[in-house]
Image 1 (spheres, helix red, strand yellow):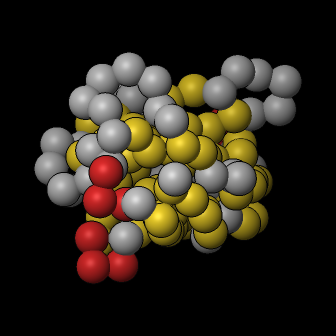
Image 2 (cartoon, rainbow, N blue to C red):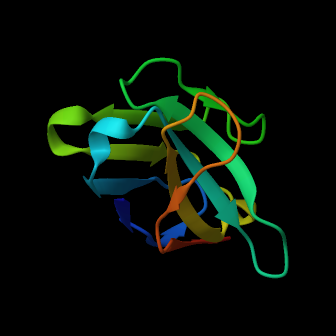
Amino acid sequence: QVQLVESGGGLVQAGGSLRLSCEASGRTYILYRMGWFRQAPGKERLFVGGIRWSGAGAYYDESVKGRFTISNDNAKNTVYLQMNSLKPEDTAVYYCAATPSAGGEYDYWGQGTQVTVSS
């Protein structure tokens, strides 16, 4: 099994920045992909971006491209989501996810961290 714990959420003004962290523990050696998702109140959970556990091949949803950056530190078993130029519409609970697979669904999920962007 793999456990994921997110941290770094909070309240920020529009135009500000936050960095979310996702620390993985357990059988991390099986992981191939990591992803970030978000869910706004009353809406479905949406994909934000992803990266290979090796750190290669970051990719993003169009809504965050150019503002958000995903990176990882394998020595710390941690993946980061750097969020810049935040907008009120970025307000959501942010989740990290992981999978041993190269495609398909994510198998492991964190508990989520709240990000609130005020206007």
